[in-house]
Amino acid sequence: MYYGGETELRRTVLHSRHRELGAKLVDFGGWEMPLWYRAGAVKEHMAVVTAAGLFDTSHMDVVHVGGSGARAFLDRAFTRDISTLQPGRAGYGAFLGQNGDCIDDAIVYPIEEGRWSVVVNAGMGPEIARHLRGLPGSPAEIGEPAERATKIDLQGPKAQEILAMILPDPAALFEKLPYFSFKGDFDFSKSAVRLRNGVPALLSRTGYTGELGFEIFLPLDRAGPVWDELLALGGEKGLLPCGLAARDSLRTGAALALSHRDIGHWPYVNHPWRFALPYSSDGAFTKDFVGRAALEKAAPSARHTLAFAGYDPRRVEPADATALVGGKPAGMVTTIVTDMAIGRIGGGIVSIASPDRPEGWMPHGLACGFVRVDAHLSPGSIIVLKDGRREIEVEIRDEIRPNRTARRKLALNELP
Amino acid sequence: MKELDELLLPENLRYAEDHEWISETAPFRIGISDFAQDQLGDLTFVELPEVGAVFAKGDEFGALESTKSVSPLYIPVDGKVTAINAAVRDDPGKVNEDPYGDGWLIEIEPSDPAEIGKMMDRAAYKKRLEESPR
Image (cartoon, rainbow over all chains, first blue to last red; front, side, top):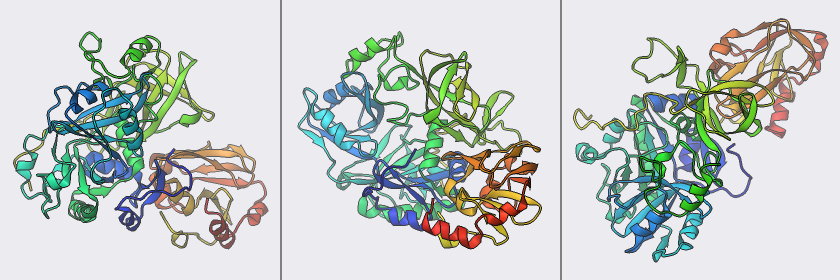
């Protein structure tokens, strides 16, 4: 699923470090990126759920949108209502075509009035910039940011205490930094956030693992030593460098979408990510946005994307698999991974990090992911996934891995 | 990822094109090579046959699931399964940690033990990996 052609691959500034750390490298969106390091994907996944992991995510693109009309323009171009999103807060949503299909998902950052940064997936910057320029009323400035950044994701319940070790004044920085907020500037010369050694940064309380954590944007030429320092200081707290395999299993367990797999060129509706659309309590849209009319038209008949979890680690091959509802083919599997940090106890799902787990209990992992099927199914419905090898029963669910820490309040006292 | 010269490739084993190994003498154990476990990455599930199952050379006798893929296991010679390693069902990581020891998969009674001698020895398998590391 991660492999591409043998064409010239782009490398991040941390590439030589990945090699030294024994990474297995693969093509991901035209970038040569770590699939896993020496510890292996299972230990990496476990580290993020119980301690912390460090990811090089510099392959993601940033699009700059500037000008006096930037807010109103982006609010119309983006599915999420960002009309009142204040500088310092970030918003997750998607960019749709007029046909309601999803071009890419993104996090938008209002840096200050008239200056926005949009973080999109690997290689998607040029396409999103082109799409935005083609919309009516597009502001003058749409394109690459002034400088390309390195992005390092520090994720896991111990992410805060590890990050604190490289901050000059951790308490000040962590104050008023709830989930989906940020401090600093993508224009690093203007960033008020400095790490302990004077490195300017943008610190975002976001991530793609479902666990407590930060996405740290750094100038290209300063990122290497920060990566080294975090690994060196975090090692005794269980921090591991983590690759794409762990990233995929962690985000799936957290029921987060992968763009171009779980969302893509079909109507962006009838999926678990309702928070990315501007629904009112009665299910109508509260604002106008590109693709709205097509979504409203498609909603009654569009297929439903639903999260599921199985009963053991066994998977099917997604490319060959059919979802059977009541024994009849009803759709496809878009993602299936094994979340090795969870298992079933008495029918319910328990995580290695659940406070109520039995003493000494070790999970064997559960298959989980997303299906796209013809009809809506309620949580608790049992369906069958079938490929050429086997059939597995899975349960439709709202949530997969319990006791995740992404939204945990940051500790402001008792910092190391 | 391991370089070719870091791979453990014991003597006294024979190797198959699909990276299974089998002992040269009884008991005839079967597992996967260090190369195979390194390529697959961490295993999440091991599917093994029942004791008593009979397979012809090339038959699928089980599967290994890693975080990356589901990979069928092929029997390298005709034979009947006499034992399975239940411990790797409980802890698939044993196959990664010790593919020739605690991570063995099944034992068989080969229909014709002489067939094993026709498989690649250590030197031939190493050459095969050098020529085509897949």
